[in-house]
Image (tube, rainbow, N blue to C red):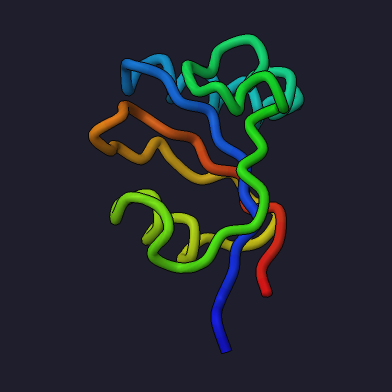
Length: 93
């Protein structure tokens, strides 16, 4: 059976910025609103939604974090060649 994850993310240039956004989310701010406001990825316009994807579809560091994370949590910052990500695990199947 192929594993899949449904995730959203916020992509920024600096680790410090990613940590600040993560703290704000932990403080009660809405992940999707933060994605629309701060994410450098085009998915930010959709609240950071990446939809469902199979293992191996994303760059290694992102993939490992997304498939290793607990459903319902926001993990990160995770560094990839694209920058710093916060990843919200929306579902797994």
